[in-house]
Image 1 (cartoon, one colour):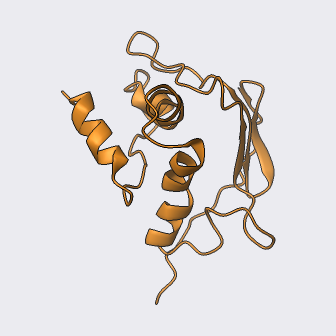
Image 2 (cartoon, helix red, strand yellow):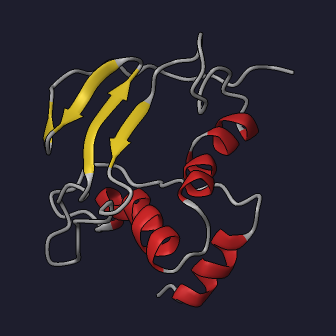
Image 3 (cartoon, rainbow, N blue to C red):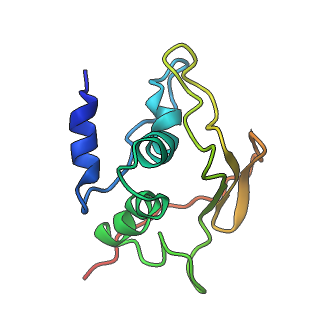
Length: 138
């Protein structure tokens, strides 16, 4: 069992990237599959104040993309891939629980992958614009 104090200490480190290794292949997955990222934003960021919303998002996007050599990912700028999430910073949080492990996040309005809407108003659009990402060689 994870100790939340350990999680908080690790998340607080400047160079900690936030990710998930969950795969949606099980009818009853762990609740973290649907809840990891919104939990960081709502619980650790907003409620506990471990870091700002901007820092949390950077740990999930730009920091991770840079460390893995994923060029033009994890940033919002002209010429970069449009992987964006529209959320309400006052309400974003996990909707999943052990009793209900497959539940959309609260406060997420729209998700775009490569500029295409894949999630809006609590439902998948059915679009699958993702692609395999390869590390840029130094």
